[in-house]
Image (cartoon, rainbow, N blue to C red; front, side):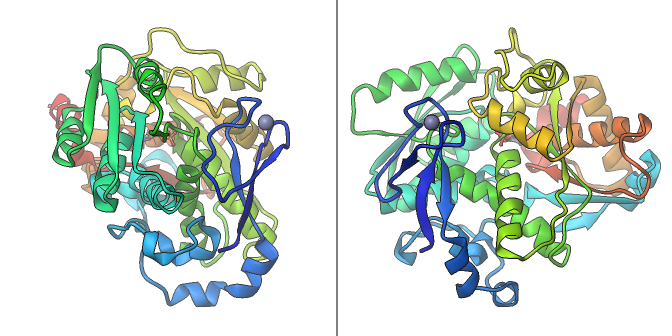
Length: 389
Ligand SMILES: *Cc1c(COP(=O)(O)O)cnc(C)c1O
Ligand SMILES: [Zn+2]
């Protein structure tokens, strides 16, 4: 394994990666660091090309040392395909969809859960707990069951019912909360006080991010080890966005891609847009959003812990942040299905709305190569589909 240590992106303090860690003492999330020189000698893009079609193809850049602890359901290596008809419709000649809907548990949360659970198990964890908007809880309950770990999950009553069923099926302990994900977080914090349970909340442990960063590796590999012009990401906790940026920085250090960085775009719903508000004011921290509400449940995160890292990723990459309305999300979801057939998840559809608007404003050029992430399978959201009429 090439994992060398953890470090704090805010105060630079370093931590031992061979024992369990949560946040830095300054309150910032920690990032996993690797000996990239040694990893780059151990593996090349050519070696990776011949490996299994899942995210473990990048194992030298992942934090699990003993294969015995790898808990997998075949997650990762999702297809990335051109959406030509819809692209032409909104004025983009090179629109690509990375379809995370084909991931176990139906959302890209499985990437973070597979790597997070595997590493937690390797470090001796027997029981994890976390708040969720649905998909993360479903994925972590699933992978915890597969690894033989216990899971305690808290989620808003209003979260999609399918995740409740998934969590119960995996025999995790489920607490329903009349509130938002931050209220579920408070409940979990109370449970953690009892001790003996590992806090696997978003960005409070460093390895979920490592699972999600593999989307960045895949995008580059699927383009023949180069980067697109723009990546549009539906941002809740922002783990995937921060992870994708980390992946590109690692690949650049490894010499696997050139110096070009894609411009990163964070999409939020106008019903919950703390990152967009902070970005538009040039702030480097986000204020909590009051009365959050949107059809794109996966991105209803009023106070993301990774706000600094998200905002830094947007500004350093020359990207931007955009809020879109629920009505537009649903109409682009319908429009995409009419042009390309596939039903996306509302969060994925929000990226299309963003692409359409950024093209109309001229921020995107016709020739720009734009990757949008469809972060979950549309079939998990029968309510939004029936709202289409
Ligand atoms: C969790 C989730 C998101 C947001 O992911 P973050 O990495 O937390 O920003 C987007 N879409 C779906 C479907 C999700 O479940
Ligand atoms: Zn710190």
